[in-house]
Image (cartoon, rainbow, N blue to C red; front, side, top):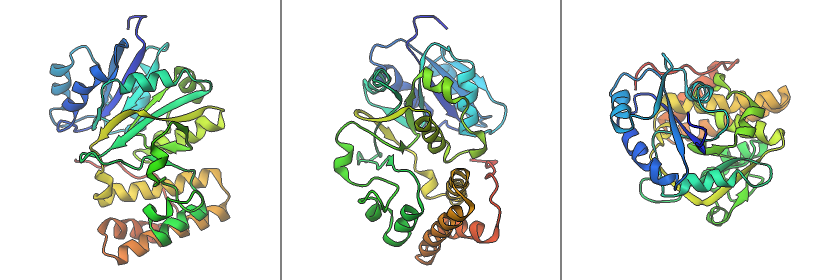
Length: 305
């Protein structure tokens, strides 16, 4: 990789043919004049993802992981072959970056102690996505179960997801945020080491941001950088929702006592139980796993998608 490269753009693909071209086409304008290199880690896609990457952006460095190893493993693979002198812009293949947004995030890393920078996200209908998160606690899990996530998130003590629109209007430090797109300074990346591959698909960014803050780095929200996140599959897919729910509890257990973890799991189970009674299939699937399995192991990757 040429020494003048300012940033490495990293994405991880798996059967991403329906979204990858739009992502690739948005990157050049998003980097706003910075010199950059794209590294793609492909988790053994069985569709035309690889062919689209090669035809749309032949200069990209494409690394074949060889299996559906998950998002964290893909990131680790891509970072391992990237230039060790550059900052990173890590993004899902289903995001569309606004012009100049990548540059804003990379430049935010020059602020004192900022190790991670995240943008304002919106959905395909141009509505604001609530992407800022607070640290998980028992009270916040209980608040979301009883009040619902959108209502609980209006109060800092009662909700993990920040749901007040005004909170998304100004730059601020946050506990963590959606991992759909984030810039990571090379110094921060080197101090933290690899992303946790045991999370497989969900909570990797939570773990990464928490570790960053524990190491003294700031996580910075920059609303001047904007991106569309097509995503949202976990909201409808019972298997993915169950993986997300299980990983929330596994991550909490790593940082808290057994008693606190039991309380957190009870609050999460209550949440899924109430939503299952309301007729949500994804919550019924998660509830079955939470009530049948005393010990929660890592979710397994799907074999098709």
